Amino acid sequence: MGLVVQRRVELNGSVEYTVDDPSNEILRNVDEADSEALVLLSGLGAVCDTAFNQVQLPRVIEELRHLAGLTKGESLPIVEAMSLAEQTLGMSHRYLVFVGD
Image 1 (cartoon, one colour):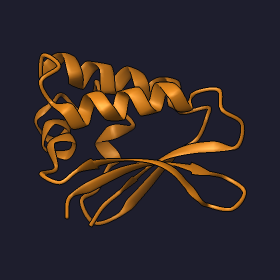
Image 2 (spheres, helix red, strand yellow; image 1 turned 90 degrees about the horizontal axis):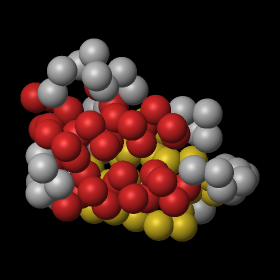
Image 3 (cartoon, helix red, strand yellow; image 1 turned 90 degrees about the vertical axis):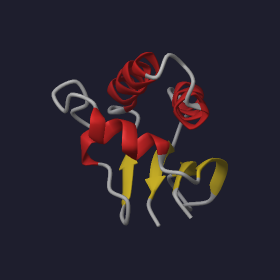
């Protein structure tokens, strides 16, 4: 199935938007990158869920930009996840969840 990135509503957990990464490009690129540059994303797992709140989102966006730069913007799941994170930033009661298999 691969990784899925979702924007969820904090109060009821409903999913507002989803980015699919069926071939796990995000995880593969995180594993290949320098873990010091990816402090938060290095904690993603293929079989677990990882949620980021509004306080953490600026750093997540920075790390996704770093990944997008490493792939020269050619990884659609990374670019779409970065876009979703940017859209989610500042939205009340919303968080970004990376859902493993």
